[in-house]
Image (cartoon, chains in turn blue, orange):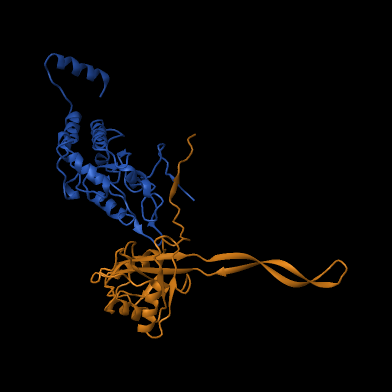
Length: 210
Length: 205
């Protein structure tokens, strides 16, 4: 929103008049009802469950409704070690979610493989196959860290412009909403990563170290 | 409760009870002193049945099956050999010469079984009877399955097959259990090389 519009809004609110934009209203509604998928992979899932319970109370952020079906979920929290045998199912679940959809990679394993990185059976980070919105380090991250990640995601949703080049994926018909499911190969998953998704900060595909 | 016979006594009992069985005791030098019994392939099943059904032993519970990979090893030793050696004056005399001899010990895969008796509760201390089966080498990886004797071996032998490539002849359902069916490697073998999927961040300009 342009600065002069913001100033006008502030000025009006000082005089007891509330104004908003459709974009703000739309994003405000979206960010306060992000429904996660009931989905846990390992010990991080226990922390995720603790986050939803009374002590940490994720319901304060409108995310208490964990949906048992990907068709009704907006957010997938990849909480735990993604084994190579599980990775196609994670990608498939993500593909089955309707847009707009978001991903939180929770914990060292989900973002990089963690302590099991050198294992023959562990995927070195789910961001090789699906686009991750927020990464949380930690082994496992405390509930506060998940809440912080959730608030970061809310901020991200709030700031999404609905028009223009940077509009979110669900409003851009040219961008994919499903991603290829890796196949079980003779020596590992094929392909080892999705070059459309697995990018460095400059937007170039990351190379595999030979 | 009664004490378990020692490995030597077990070997004698087995050889008396199962005619033709070749059992050798593999000593364990550690303080636990869990000596184990190496069985031959032809009589492994008969020995297993003998251990399970013998009234004093009644080893009715196989608690674990493990795979072990032993790589090919090479030992060098220096041996003194008497040889005819030509001296500086051209006359051959017998002298002691040191030679290094290399011996290659071929590797093999091994399946290890730990047996207990629920009925007899041998001990204390509760010690397992340890059986070993060895493959001929690391490419001919067949051993007889003991699943027909102890049902609890079924999944664990499948796991040893999955991760080590030990083929258990006589197993009712020998498939991979942890990795997917199309997987071709045996990841717990010592010469396994995982696929290169580490990333290298491109240096920032």
